[in-house]
Image (tube, rainbow, N blue to C red; front, top):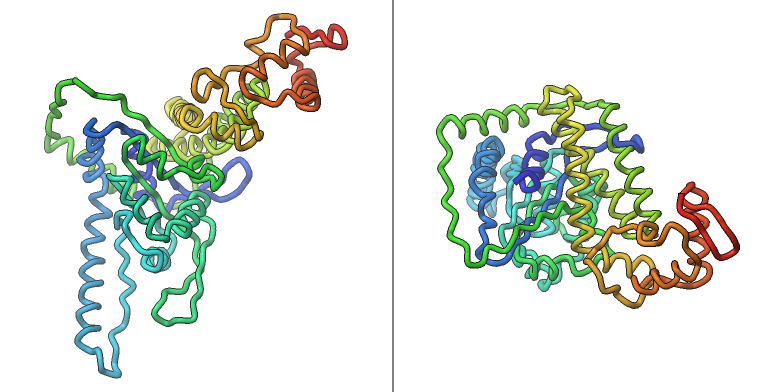
Length: 390
């Protein structure tokens, strides 16, 4: 539920900005993907998220009325010289089945506010891929993670031309198979920007019965949604910077010990996502750094990292290192190579271990790993081919 909520909460607090560790400005941009087998209850997200979306949906109703009134006037004055003025109506919650031109138009009219796309069937986007528009949509989604600029320019006046920063949050649900079809190309980097949550298989279990929200609970959720919707300004929280910096360093050490380029790549994106989640929690804690803020940021970063490693770790490792064979072991295992070696080990021990994991056993690769471990105080040299763990 937390992972599903992040894109909605980020869209509500769309006017909030802050700087990451690299001093680059960030917003509360989140992509989330909930996966589970068919008929396993993915729709649990609908009711609470509908309540959280109340302020956005209320404004969208007004914007859609403006849009429809403009279309009616346009039709009525089709052959007239006096054309109605475009009110720049901008509903922000539009689902995922939206054309590139319309999406660009809404991003332009939104003037820096996040749009949100919620797709309860991931295959809807897979179909758009078959229709030939996916390459552009994929570009837009990837740029949206960093709020980078996207633009298009056509000669035709009928097309929408724009060059705009992309503020767009995305929530998808689908089966594991539809997820694999959607994120089939790891090289484009979209999968590494997504918070994945995997629901367990509910085969042969009784149907869950959810208690309805009380009126007081509904009011509480909507009250917090309105509060976030009214928030604006720039947040500064140096304690959170330190928390995420420490988490990133721990993961860097683990990646180095495991000699895993996939771990090193995924920790970076997970750190950004965890930092954004921490900033959201900081906002909800009345802009105060509490123990909860630090724990939440670390929890989200770790949760995102572990799920990405489990889903994509092996495949990404092969693409990054060029390994040809998949090792037969736990999927996406983040186990340290160093941990698997004995207290005193030889070059031959390391070569055997890397071969079993499908990693390069070239002399240059073995030397690089040993030098890295030695330089970071992980091992000491006993002889030309013998080493001791510290």
